[in-house]
Amino acid sequence: MEIDPDTAAPAIKQYVCGHDCGVMINPDIVHGMTYGGIAHGIGAALYEQFTYDDNGQLTSGTFMDYLIPSALEIPSVKIVDHCTPSPLTTFGQKGSGEAGYLGAPAAVANAVNDALAPLNVEINELPISHLALWETLERAKQA
Image (cartoon, rainbow, N blue to C red):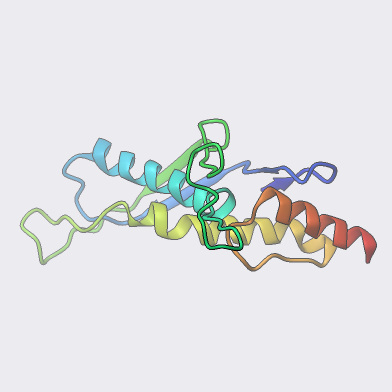
């Protein structure tokens, strides 16, 4: 993860996901679910947020206001398959796709905080918006 010190723009430089889903009956589907889950998890970590006004009205009800990552924000992803057959299923298959969405927000948040560590600051709330990054960098400059 890199964070531009002037603009606070985050950039994921490398993303690797390891998973064990047993025997993959259709690797293309398993990888597609994993890639999609990672993209969704990156969105949850950095972009997507429901916001409300003081009257409780949703203010992020359209894609103009509710940010989702595009292909420009999602890095190239490397998936490492570790396939240990399950003894409990007919073909040795297990669940798949969870490694994408469940792991991505934590992985991205940890990468952001690793990038911020030299400044002795951290962010512990998702999503880690561009504004939150900028405010954190500004606080670090003041310290």
